[in-house]
Image (cartoon, rainbow, N blue to C red; front, side):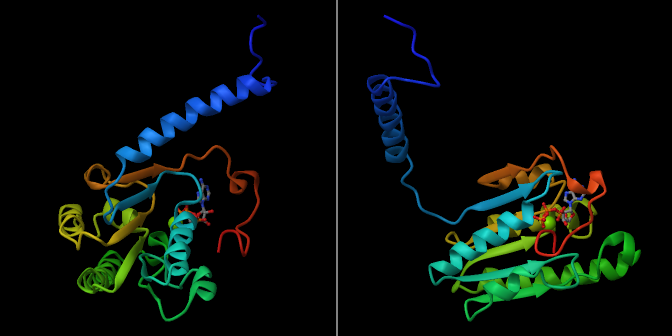
Length: 203
Ligand code: ATP
Ligand code: MG
């Protein structure tokens, strides 16, 4: 018998392999039966953390559910808001701009507190299905809000509420508390090749 070539299997070899995968998938889906709100953390130094969060917001809205987005740091709402907007979406941009532009720690902290009060309102509103806290990891790593306080509030939230937290440098305590942690690793970024941030891609 010839050794199977993974790039060019016979129909029989393919069928056998797929039957194995199917059995494995069946036992895994049978074991995953819980349904509850999850805490998602998108972190890492590569691009795509907020983009993925906005994609999750779009999915929630597609099911007619309500989403709240709170953009920390950023002073203007991401352009995604323009297409996602509707009665099921509430969007707040509560930043003063990049921290290296504002150079105003006390002012930045006050805006973070304002954003956190809006997050607490979403925790308390049972009609909200998904809460996205964009760049909250940056807020925590800059110590603008205390991580312990934020993690405790996230852990005490309504059990059905899904939360997405984005931004570089997610603190270990938050990753520990999360159900889903994705780290986007930079392999290449056009900025390093002298390509500017472009509309529709970066903003
Ligand atoms: P995006 O909002 O595009 O999904 P992100 O949320 O993963 O990006 P942020 O840390 O919020 O990343 O960065 C915001 C901006 O900085 C984006 O315009 C992004 O393209 C850019 N950026 C992200 N990673 C890098 C990098 N490694 N080098 C330079 N610029 C970057
Ligand atoms: Mg981002």
